[in-house]
Image (cartoon, rainbow, N blue to C red; front, top):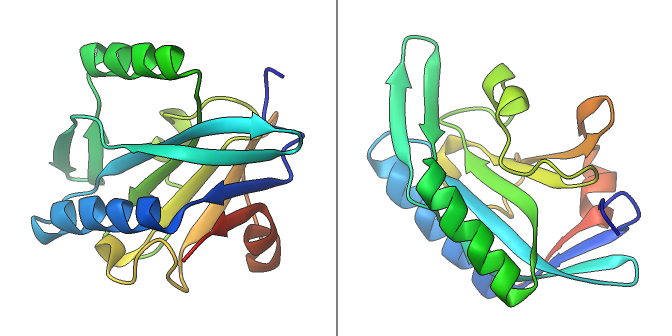
Length: 161
């Protein structure tokens, strides 16, 4: 399977959700966005997230807003880890200072590039965490990132307690 298009459910353990919240909030305290990546293994039509990754990243405050950049060496290190552990990068999680939406930068420079992969955007610098009521979930299709309804998001992404 080269894509995630046939995955009907992505399952994320609670401790990885909690660790992600800590990373996003730490950056938010300094007024910065942050990316956290979730990888896992596919079993039938489900993907089980096994690890979260908070790659070294540089935060920017630009006239048009906030963004982060992950350098090539760090991406290479992550790709080696994924290969050695036989895991696949499936979900990108990142924070925004206010509303949860996919910006033009998010669309143009994603970390997850496999069709069917997910992008979880967490508002308010993760004040309410990845399980918060105003998070937004997007899925990558051949026509770009598509926002999922809350009903579809709950069906596709299972964030455990």
